[in-house]
Length: 131
Image (tube, rainbow, N blue to C red):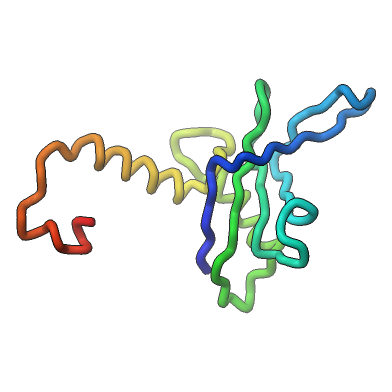
């Protein structure tokens, strides 16, 4: 299975709270939007609101399943698995916006780019390992 994750989509989601049309709140953690705004009749794209936001508006994460040859995992199981992975980040006690493996990869790439200060040897410049 291959899933493309967009951490910063421009879409915003709100819920109408009880008490009138002017009271809007952020969706609760675990809210998954897969109908209405995504491609019609397509279960391969969904938005997930994983964390609780107290101030400002919630920034949902967009997921697009580009390849799935699993015969065992249903769409709802993928939604649930993705949400559960947002709780597995070691440095934070609650949920984070993206699944923990993606956050670890981002942190590793940031660390590598910040500490790499010298040019690589000429023998590595045309190797995919270095790229």
